[in-house]
Image 1: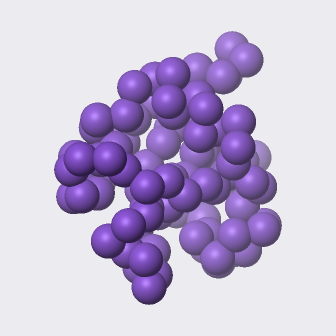
Image 2: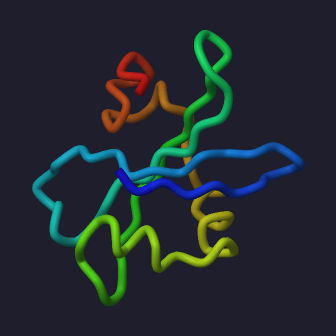
Image 3: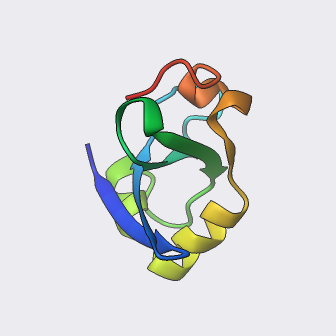
Length: 91
């Protein structure tokens, strides 16, 4: 699975595609931002609609760090999202 890493406020966050399939799977993709491990892991989730490549891995690779930061700033805690089974489906 494609992964990226960004820095937010001096902390490293791993970014990967959620892999959740919805009725809009050809139009939008889920992004999961994750830092830490085990019980200290924090996840945030957002969705985006790519312009250009529709393959999930190509869409993630094509995002600039600035754009990933923008998506991070609009993301929600994992407990609010079906992408992560409302915080219970940690990877």
